[in-house]
Amino acid sequence: MSHNVLFISVDQLTAATIANRNDCLSIPNINSLAANGICFDRAYCSDPACAPARSTWMTGLFPSEIGTVFNGAPVFDDVVDLGSVLRGAGCRPVHAGKWHVEGRDVHDSFDVLFYGQRQIEAGAGEFYDVSTTHAAMAFLLNQAAESAPFFLHASYVNPHDICEFQHSFEDKPPPELTALGLLDESWLPKLPDNFNFDPREIVSQRVMRRGGDALIHGPIEARLQHWNTMQWRAMTWHYHRFIERVDTEIGLLLDALAQSGLADDTVIVFSSDHGESNGHHRMFQKFTLYEESIRVPLIIASLGSWSFGEKGRRNDTYLVSGADMMPTLCTLLGVAVPAGLPGRSIVPALSQTDAAEPETVYVECNYWSRALVDLRWKYVYEYMPNGDGSDATPPRNATHARGLEELYDLIADPGETVNLAYDRGHTAVIERFRVRADQVEADRRSRPLTDPRAVETARRWGDALLAYWQKHPELDAMRSRNEAPLLNRYHSPSTP
Image (cartoon, rainbow, N blue to C red; front, side, top):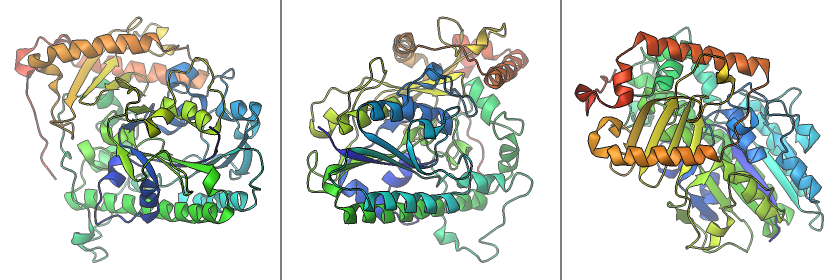
């Protein structure tokens, strides 16, 4: 099998936003991709942050294995990336748009069509995405059909600009658009059903993401605590507009592919690096292990006459990891998959209903926390810092003590609103996932961080987590799961 591949990636698009049709969002071009391909409804990022997730795409390894354990931490120099693998196999790797693989110059292994004067990381999708489209269109329309196979990555920023919307209101409240008569309330999406949450979260979630002193975007969190219902709903309205903006760019790119004469020989892969919390669990942005943050869209499609079977199908039972992206792309391009990668190609699942399905999918988050997901359960766990200098190596059970845990029944409670980890009726499920976590981590080749800034960030975060544990000794009882009064205790914060 050998095809050209057009990889269309967007930034911060959660799977449910496009899977659940609603009257507040119009995305005809993404819907067209779904109609011309196969949607994998259970696809997960490797880590809900830009650089870690994208680095996994480009290396096939998890963040703890390559050094990019959070934004700002560079990939180890000796790690081989996708562009080098493809070029070595005679396939042309081409890139346009956002890169954000820390410490790795995209020009070293890709032919770059558009990259901006400096690295594109966060905002300005309104401007960068237009140039990305034009560059990719020009490539397709000028590419001879008989040329060597190519891999074209059209990497869009939006809907990531929702972050810039949030940052704009760190020191002031957002305007009341309905009160000002600029929006009608009927235009605003409703608050998500899981706007409220079970506060028995892991400590790393509390310290990193909750409260005005949160380590990640604390100033925004401080303001959001005072938002009313209409302000939350207006943020979702803005998020939808950013999605529609990038959908327009995707439509132009698909038109160019259709006109290029390459459609019959080109597979389209569409995905996002991670999701967007967008009010679910009263959260914003990513950096959490809830579904809206880690579950991403994944469509493999063709505008040509061939297909891997009936088009427009959905696969909701095959668990896909961000670590599967590199093996999958290599297989589609007819390139040998590098040895030793933790992921696997999902190409067999495109045409075989009996393709072997992964038992679980594994996700890392914020250096200290992890998740395992199967078709019914999600198990979330964290590690406690040692505070003795050993924390510069990503934590695992062999070196660090486990902290708190979360368990959600994704069938009975798809919104993850009741943490079952402290219900003794689910002890067997917890134990099974603990064993599975040890098995998965035994296969991870975690390496010590070497970049001084990354080491300092890991230490600073670890110090904050240790301080929280020391300030709240009652957490030790939760960790041992022996505190009867905590069992099944659920608190739902009031809706503003």
